Image (cartoon, rainbow, N blue to C red; front, top):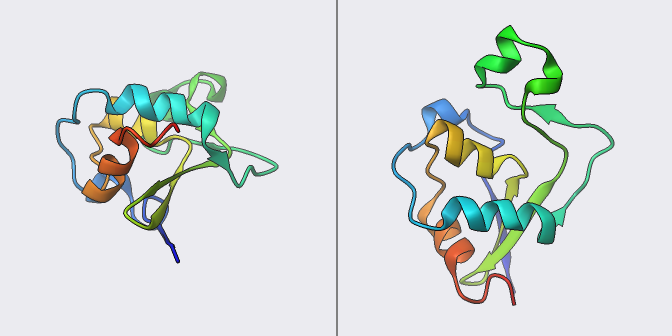
Length: 109
């Protein structure tokens, strides 16, 4: 039996762990936005931390409308589609279990 774990929607990225991401994490997450999508919504949300959202037209802001899901150690991790953007642009460091699952050789099999 697997468990599902989600975290990014429950706490602002600003208050979570930040740091240097492991090599390949952003590329893997960007790929997963195409291959591991789930829970597509009828609309989308903008990155709440981008300056372009606050100062510029909304069309320039990153936006997402689904989740990505990845299995690791019997846990189904769910993250917003924008998690790759959060990591790359805002130095967000997801939980270690999620990072391990994303970088696992089995992640794309």
